[in-house]
Length: 393
Ligand code: ATP
Ligand code: MG
Ligand code: MG
Image (cartoon, rainbow, N blue to C red; front, side):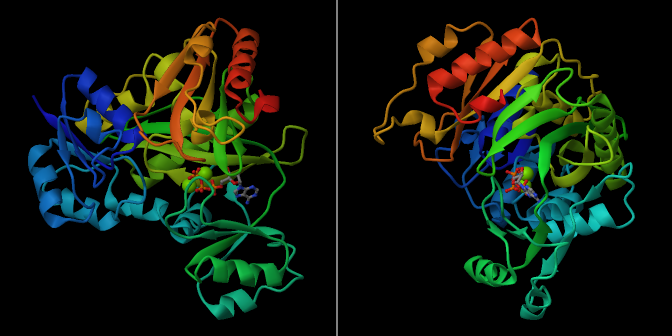
């Protein structure tokens, strides 16, 4: 039997391992943490740093193909692996996705995203670039200062209203390379998943609408009518052409903002891309004929990509560490019995031992025969678990 490898041991790696194993593959996970969600379920766990040459050599020797489950692995590690083993997505494209400066430059220059632009922004890498931004820059302020590298789940971001706040925020972030992005009034957010094979064949899912709370995904709405059809088509086309232009192989997620525009439906702005399956695509496990992780396996292994088809409307609720604590900060086990007695609930827990605030511990997908019943059940489940974003369901 062939072995498929993944860099990173988080929940995305775990769900990749599950999908690979279902097709009969052995799996190998390279991850320093001894108790990682993916390492715990994989045949091989190479427990070492992502940039350890010996570990990378061992992974490449074991595997037929290798992928990554988070964008902050050193692009150099992917490059090293690629010398002796097929790696998808490649180091160059992961390098773009892991640096907001490169990513935004790519969105702005030369790429045809069906007329979808990114938010107005400025690069801040030097004190001179910082001082150049004065209070009269209403094209950039109020804005969000984001570290160029290593940010996720809203970490490494500070909201600023004035040039003075901007200067303080840059210092707070350690004066590292950043982008300042105009704070846009969002009507909604959505994301699109694309899978593309070595042969250039690409498939995609309809956009899902996402609700974030404190910069972290809370709720995903995946059903027909979740957003205006014209915007949905544009977002999907933009994401597919982005994957094609990048020569991308694997699963790519592109996040979009919906902002006020010429008509009541609003306009699209591209936010960022993730070179891997995405939290907003977890509903595909339970609501589609083929999941984003199945497509990741197919793409990297050179198997044909099935056309994704959603068979049930779905809402996904993220389960963060807070769910494991009561109002007094005492640890408690959520009432799974009550949640799972609701119709169409699918519980996924990632096997993380320690619950912490903001930590992604699992998710709950609700499927059903129609959107109304899915919403009703999702509201009940969110109420039982004390989840945020309840008013957005
Ligand atoms: P992820 O976990 O998705 O990788 P991230 O830390 O890379 O997140 P972003 O996607 O850049 O962060 O921002 C997180 C959230 O903050 C967005 O989904 C959105 O809700 C809000 N946000 C980010 N940028 C802007 C903006 N320019 N205007 C308004 N809201 C924004
Ligand atoms: Mg991000
Ligand atoms: Mg994001």
